[in-house]
Image 1 (cartoon, one colour):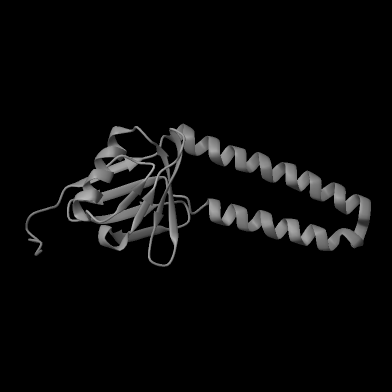
Image 2 (cartoon, one colour; image 1 turned 90 degrees about the vertical axis):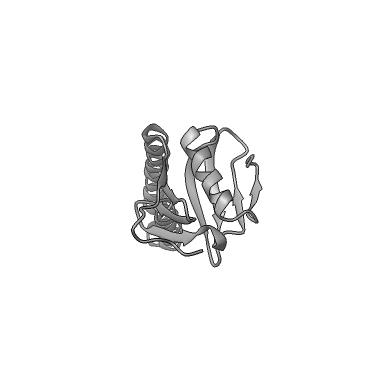
Length: 153
C-alpha cells in the first residue's frame, strides 16, 4: 500500500491516567525504601559478612527500577499501522504487522503486553478507556492477524 506523503495520516493517542502512573511509581519508590531499610539492617547485623546479600538485593532493586522505567505510559497509533510507545526510559517505534499478540490485563486496570519480535513492551492501561479502544481498533485494522488475549477487538 503506497502512502501519499502529501496527505497527513491521522494519529490516535492513548495516554494512561496520570494518577495511575504516579501511584505505580509511588508504590515502587515505597518498596525501594523498605528494601533499603532492610539492607541497612542486614549490613548493621552482619557487617561485611552480609555484603554479598547486600549486593544481590541492591542488584535486584536496580534492575527492578530499570525495567519499571520502560513501562510505556503513552501509545500513538497512525492509520497505516505505525505504533509509537513512549516510556520514561525509551521510545519504541514499530508497525502493527510486527506484533503477533496483544495481551490485556485480567482486571480493568493493569498493563497491556505487546509481544514484539525480540522483546515485550508493556503499557499502563484502563481496559475500558475509549481512546485505548480506538487506538487498538486501528491496530486491528492495520493487521487483522493480531491475536488479542483478554481484550475484545
